[in-house]
Length: 128
Image (tube, rainbow, N blue to C red; front, side, top):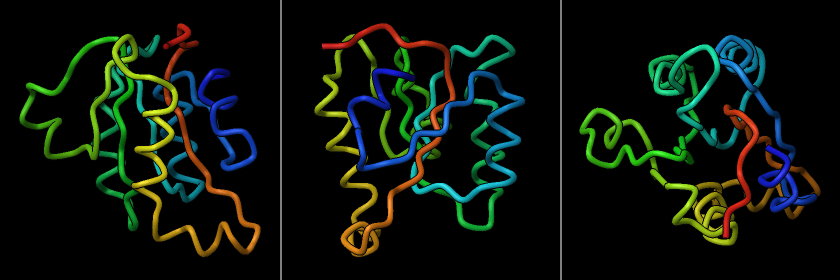
């Protein structure tokens, strides 16, 4: 989480959820612009959050950013905006994808608002 937070700097507020339970609580109490989802959570798969996210009144786009590749799963392809493998994705590419997904919020950012991103996952390994 620290690596993702450092990459976004002051552009976004990163809300880290290290477990499914915490992520569900955060999703129930806040509105997010993007969810960055790791699949390897200590209490289950991050994929369990997809139905929760899709059930929100205003579901945010989801970026799967994980150690394993989920691109071949049809159910995941339909539920996520992007699926990235940490070892093959640069920090800059992750930032670019999130910016592209949040284009409608650019006007709010220009007015001084920060985006809220939730990251569900364990501590990340440093990526290229």
